[in-house]
Length: 170
Image (cartoon, rainbow, N blue to C red):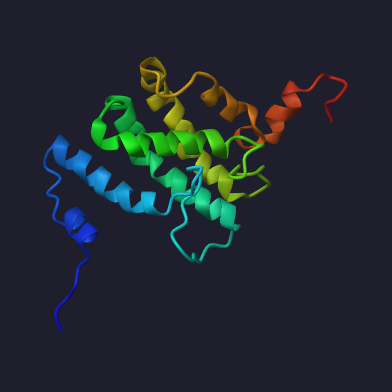
C-alpha cells in the first residue's frame, strides 16, 4: 500500500534547514496549519481533542503559546517580514485578548500547579524579544505588554501581596 504524506507535512520534512531562508520557511510552514485552528480573537488554538489533564482553556492557550518560541525571535529579527504579516497580527491580537479579563478569550486566572504557568515562559519571551521592534514599527500599541503584567495571569500571588498596602498584606 502506498504511503500518503499530506502536502503541509511534505513541505516541513523536505526542508533542508541549511540556511536562514530555510529556517524562516520552516517556521512559516509550521505555523500555517496552527492558524487554521486559531480562534476569532487569536488567543486560543483548537487542534481537536487532547489527552491533557488540564482544562480546555489551558490546552488552547498551550496551542497559542508554544508557537511563540519560534514566532517571537522571528518578529524580533524581522518584524516587517511580509510572510508573517497575517500570523503576526493574529498572535498580537491573541496576546491582547488573552490577557484582557473583559474578553471572551481571556486565558483566566492561574491557580497552584496550573498549566498557565508553563505557557507564561513563551509569552513573556515575546515581550523582551519582539515587543521593542514591534512597538517601534507601530504594530503593537504600547499598553499591551504592560497589561500582561497587570492581569492576574501575569502575576504571582506573591507579587499581588507585595503590591498591597501593609494593612492589606496577609
